[in-house]
Length: 103
Ligand code: FES
Image (cartoon, rainbow, N blue to C red):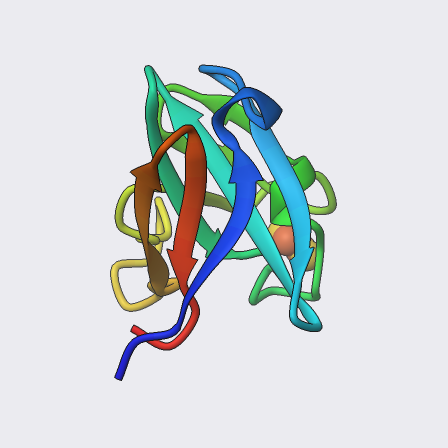
């Protein structure tokens, strides 16, 4: 089952940046990698840090609280193979960014 929600305009999150968005009581971390958008749950699985306010280097975000790093395209933790922060499906339609909250 899918639940697509419009979360931003493409201009809200320029290439190379991360954005924190609140959508239906959830915090979403949105990333723009060279014009392609990716989204993760915005709550870091370590201790709840804001992944949408992390530092983006290429496709890797660094959590601002303790430095855990995730590939935003897959949610894969960069040093623990067993830890993956599930990404949301993202699409762009008419200059709007949509996320599937239940996909
Ligand atoms: S809360 Fe993100 S690394 Fe600790």
